[in-house]
Length: 373
Image 1 (spheres, rainbow, N blue to C red):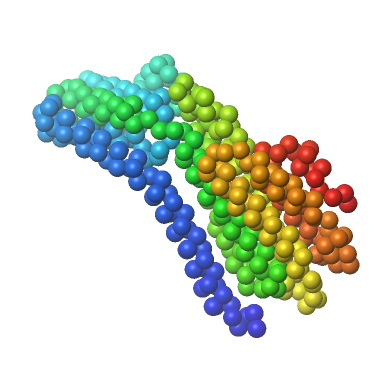
Image 2: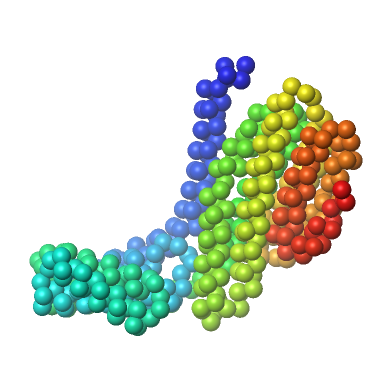
């Protein structure tokens, strides 16, 4: 029966994966549309200044520098924008100057790249500055001389214009470094909760199809968790470097720690789902209703945790919910005579501990809330 429905099942799983990827893509666009608009307008302004103010026919490096320096995320720091802008200016200026003296060729590329990177390392420890200095210097050496406009230093002044416009935009549009990590934390935790709800429904209704759907969704959710961890880590570093954002460092550090715990929770969820699916497809009947009901309570707490992450409020109420859920996870009370269902409950215990730690609970207290085995 399973083999006969394999093509239809594969198509259904593909639709689930596409739907999950689409949701994640839409979320990325929602988070990035305004930074993208800012960077696009900044590039246009830089181009206009180069063309109409400096009278350069092809001010190529003005929009390039503005676009690269601003990027397309809301997690901009003035230091990062300045690093990239200065790196581009160094690479373009040095490359422009040396090309007019030594020409272009293989050994010139090596020399210009070495000198640009060395100068960048001398000026600042930032890796972005060094990378951009080297890349832009190589571009200058590789571009034909006809592309240079505005005299020997025309491309350098274009790069300065682009960097200045980018820095001005970053200064005039400061952003709360917590906003994006909070939103990603909420979405990622909602994804964990949705998988738990689906698995709980599968267990209580004895539906292996629902369990398969839950497993597909759990696997497709990993990029969202990875994006949260990466963004929260970058925001934490921004708070460490930026005096204006330093007061938020405590929450950002907690969000990074929570992202690690939620990643573990999702991995546990995937293991639980595979185990639940195996029990549902087993020729031996298993009573999974009680296990599903306990899991539904945990899923509801995960939903509340997502809301707490999104608003930035303390998750005290969520911790109480999860502590209550943990206290009910006695595998011998839930399934006295079925060791296979007991193994599923043991996986649930690990999941609840991960969620408790993600919610800010002390690890020792989280483990102590579980019934002794």
